[in-house]
Image (cartoon, rainbow, N blue to C red; front, side, top):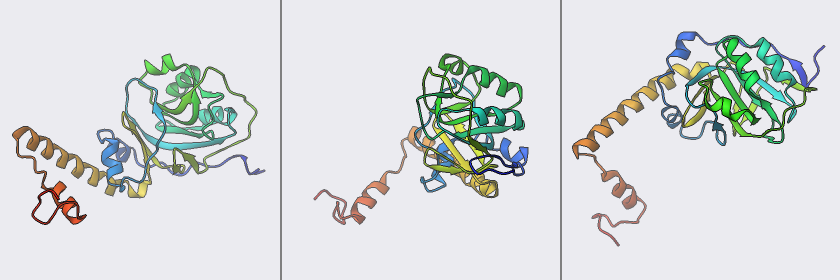
Length: 229
């Protein structure tokens, strides 16, 4: 029997592993810049000391401070999945900690994204298991429910759906639809190549800054000849 607010939905098909692997050397700014700098998670911090996050969203929506359905998700998720938890941003109780991280790693889970709190920060900091969260607290969770698995969730201003591709690094987190991934991947790689060209121009002293004055002239800040008003 299905109960809204307390249910387990089927996971959608996962994107091909080759598509996921292609994002392992792509920086999140190069992805979000090609999503018009409007899409992406904001407000979460990275708690792992090292390690890149790339995987498929396995989503959980839970009552703030309760991790019963997060535990169930750890048992249901497949290798390469990212446990993405909408805990309402509450920081009073941690939803995951070291033991859950170790269990997730043993099952091949790719990482945690927690719209809420974590704990055992020292263990997370020395690990290469990717973990992003709104904050941290020493108090543990309740385990009563309710909650939902494999439903759309709200994480840091972004709606993430089950099966979305999640990419995280030192700069933050982005999520994208599998159907849009190839096009975004190509654009992100082109963006990275252009940045390498800019770095070379800076080193060689030939970096073109004319665009700044062009923008200011268009806005009427500078006269047409480029001089100051």
